[in-house]
Image (cartoon, rainbow, N blue to C red; front, side, top):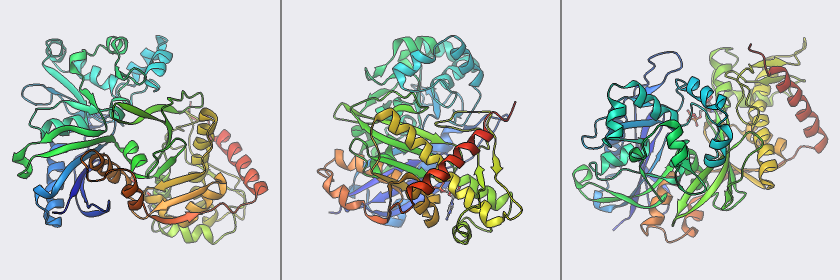
Length: 496
Ligand code: ADP
């Protein structure tokens, strides 16, 4: 009988289900979008029931396409939009409030207050994170403080919180399991990444009762069993990881120093640092990549806010291109940008610069600057920003990257991939299957259930599509980087 692994990829705008075969390759998939709720400027919510329903429909669509029976599915792996927070009633399973999404800025003032109390170092040392509205902890506190009766119910032990992985597992196990994995726990501001436990002091500071916290389990290991009523067979839920960590795993970055970058709307660069939780002095965060057999692997992470989105901006706002794909030929139609730099600091700059007052800028324009120069400069900005994060990683970890594994929509651009290799002086490797997030979740689940008995079959599943080797002279690279650094300087501190 065939043995499949079902990966659930619960993202920010849609839920997907992808079935993987024993060869580690995708067989079929299903997808459903759900509503984005914007109650106020800067606030973002999802309806937890819609998250679940869309996930369930995606599963059904995927399995219908594949024509595979539930008995043939050996395991389920879950990967999820990270940090998004749900609070629900332990007994009834009814959410108290919408899910507060990672993008939501409502707890910004609460974070300012925590920083003003001098707590930044406490949180950094224990969680590896910076105090920011992005992470889950202040979102849980917000629900307890703002939903009538919530705090009392939480103190009585009636409420639980979880990230989306916890919520889906609660649903799939019919309320039997309230769990999360190490990678998701490490994004909450409540989890001590060294002691591997919820932190009493941080729970007290954020006023979150410990009884609300999920049990933290391995990223690869049976965390629960999907109830028979859903698919007609009991299936172990055996893999869990936050989306970027799952992508790191799916990219085969299993050893210290291995690094990946995903080029979507923004970019997430993650470097495996092994058993070493490397603290950052360079504007990165320290996070748990995954936990297997009770031992965790750490990662350094840098997030860049705008990468692929600068291409959308060229298309939709400037109308310099008709499609994202067109940017490649246009960039290649000129030998260089003629000294033009685009710094896409549209929402400030993320890692490693962290300047929320930075704004986008185009510098170096001359009478001869044309559309192709600007498009090329915008693509180059994606590579320059990635280089800034990798430089920070090198300083923090003392490790230099030999090969950067890449995925995400924008890196299909051949010009960008080659320029990335050139500007890093490092090989850039792109896989055939770019569904690395779902692949990571499937790998974690299949490893735990004997579908794969080690990394060798997974190495075979990771097939290279293209390798880009650096070909730029050191002098030219140096000149371009010095221009980029000056351009970034011009964008910083603009908004007052
Ligand atoms: P997300 O998951 O964040 O929506 P995707 O991985 O689907 O992102 O990537 C989409 C992004 O990649 C968009 O911002 C788009 O502008 C960019 N993109 C897609 N194709 C290309 C291309 N050929 N060249 C440059 N950018 C591209």
